[in-house]
Length: 336
Ligand code: ACO
Image (cartoon, rainbow, N blue to C red; front, side, top):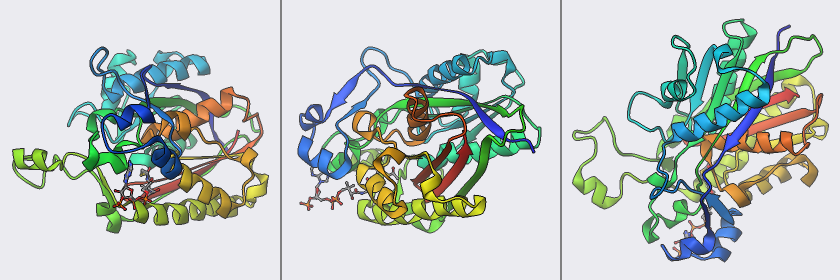
């Protein structure tokens, strides 16, 4: 049976570090509130004054690192899958922008995934299906976000603005050439559109004309809105549920897992998921303190760190899980 393997990973974050103290100068907040409620200490933001760039640039720089890590040339890539909620343009999507930036040959298809924090797992399921069916053999899967240009750094937006960071991360995926049981064992993704309004960015919207008005801008409708308590309740239910779904399907238990890498939504969510899955600290990876919530980049960024820190070795069972706007959620089980 053909299984999909991670041939290489990479990430890129802007150099500029923004501390909680920096944010206290922009809004009525405190380092104590932010750390206690979210676990975030710093985040990386694009330097909009000196080096402005879009998510596609973050994704391209991460993709270049993943190609180097995989020892795969850009000319071998036969498919790009790109996940973001913060594309450079209204259209086209960032997949084709990354193709141009990395000089990936013309004709290679580029898919754009719009599933927010679950975007990387949605894209991973697509890549796994493509590779197992032999449709493509070298897929570049990217999650990248330029969030700091879309947040309101003021009292009105403080419940959301303090959580998010900018960053890009990527993986190169291909078929496992050996029949040794290593590779992706299962990817499950889900959605429930009844909760759209609990976590959304409503404008610009094609449902109105003009798609965003001066009144909308003055009202701050271009910024994300979140019902934090509601998101928390659903996230800590759905993530353990979908992890248990992939574990049961593969006949393994959480104690068999070497590492669980959750989407870095909020440390409070991560800790509740850890408790529900009865994971030890050694079985859990968290880097939200340094990077904040980088949405579609958060899982591949954490995965790249975990692999290069030696926390994941060949043959280990690794579980990725995410919850995001939509609501959407998912999990992947990998024999590394
Ligand atoms: N600094 C200081 N005070 C703040 C801030 C801030 N940055 N933001 C909100 N507050 C205030 C509120 O105004 C409120 O004050 P009030 O009681 O005087 O009105 C108080 O803090 C409590 O506000 P809540 O929203 O009830 O704060 P809560 O205790 O619920 O914590 C939080 C907010 C951290 C968002 C919490 O709801 C939570 O953990 N939610 C999980 C959702 C989440 O973190 N999602 C991440 C992004 S989505 C994703 O990745 C899936």
